[in-house]
Amino acid sequence: MANYCFVAPILPGGEDKMNKWIHDELGKSADHDRVMRQAGVSREQVWIQRTPMGDFAVASYESDDPAKTFQVLASSNDPWAAKFRDLLSKVHGIDFSKAMPLNELVADWHALEKVHA
Image 1 (tube, rainbow, N blue to C red):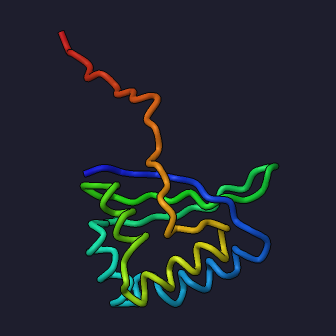
Image 2: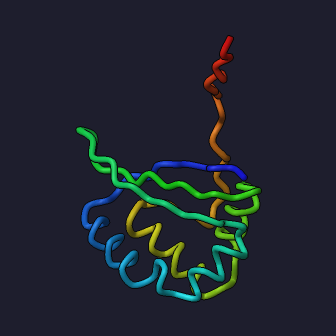
């Protein structure tokens, strides 16, 4: 299971739209659950990171196949998926229907287990 993370800028007025969406759709909508399952997502988390350069959404999707996840979310004909893509456009300025490369892994550190003598 991969924990795939990405960031997206929050456009002016976007935080209110995002909060309304979370309240109305996330966890209360069978449509949300259905599309996320079709996309292979088992967990979705979003944080807001406030920076001097503006606010960003930091999203995390747990998925066995992030490439499949984004392909499904970008191309699904499901009405809810289309509504989700529209939200991303209005909140983040991202056209999710266009192919975006997956993030490039540049560091992968793991703590070593302590060996007790």
